[in-house]
Length: 199
Image (tube, rainbow, N blue to C red; front, side, top):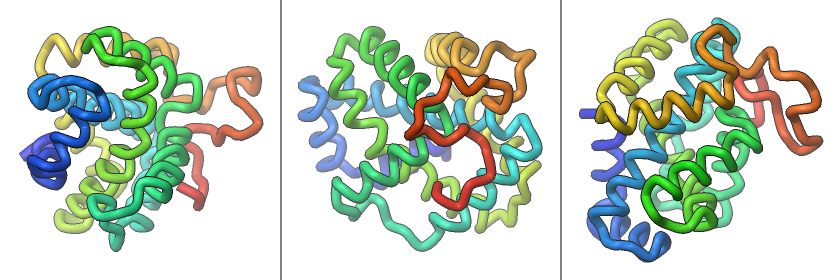
């Protein structure tokens, strides 16, 4: 079972209907947007985990999300946590780029995708944390698992996300966002992939 499958199971039919309402679309389209958003978050984590420090930082962050239940959390706290996670994984500008690209591809509003992404990020991280604990994964095993998740995506979606992530991370020759200059960060933004206790 992929993280996307686990996400759908956690949301249930009522959660999927709420997402559809947020996106002003039907549940089939909402399911596709959910797969794209979760795929982008997982892809960003995988890019960060290509760098050993990024993999260690992510593995440590998962321990902090072991005892949380984001599927029953309130929207305000989920959104705060989600923005922090997205800041680490994609960066502020990267999150906006992904939201705009996914919204255009799905034919939904960018603003709705921007509201959805920080709600889903804690869910994806919590599911990944449970998996990492159950399988006793170290940082290297976690990185491998994230790449397997990417490989499970439909081909067209994988190509779309790869292009977006290449734009954010500077292509496959760059190692995560460590090499981004200060000009690419805002004062409110944490360097994605960097060791930081405030995931």
